[in-house]
Image (cartoon, rainbow, N blue to C red; front, side):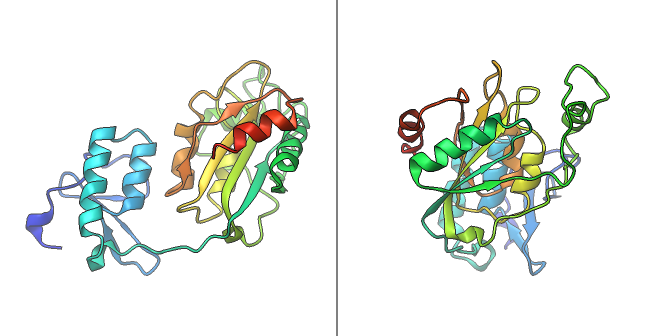
Length: 239
């Protein structure tokens, strides 16, 4: 790309922890699977917007620029063919979210997948009042990725994923990030849902957004464990 075109870009700190690089003072790029530079690519802009690194106005300007230029070689996007099926994914430490997820899957005729931790959580692990418990340590260090023992086969058969979890420390457990980072989710619709004693979704989308680069993540909702099929279906159908 010609130097005089390097007027677009997102102002970031070189020390920001995201999978990109800074060229000059404000020009972003990342590398594709072939090691080639993708300049100002859509996935990068989507990710920065989801992380709150750029505001709506900056986002709109960058997307408009990409729309105008992406037919050029530097802006080629990989088109991923997805099936039209729906998937309900859930992590449940005590069984509450499992019950809700099964009801949701039944109500919308979706496949069901449980995120199984490689190391199961014990009662002691889940003690939020103990600062040294496993869950407390994981939620205090957002770089931790608890290992997952299983995976979804042929995830490309789905275009919409409802992902459920208990609210921990006002957000999703970090094992949700582990799951999302296993897959290429570009273009998919991701809808969180949760169970909790009283906490709402908090900053869940901001926390999990960088783990689902290129996906369309919608605002989620907390439900009571015994939510009805009718309520869940009515909610899910808007997506």
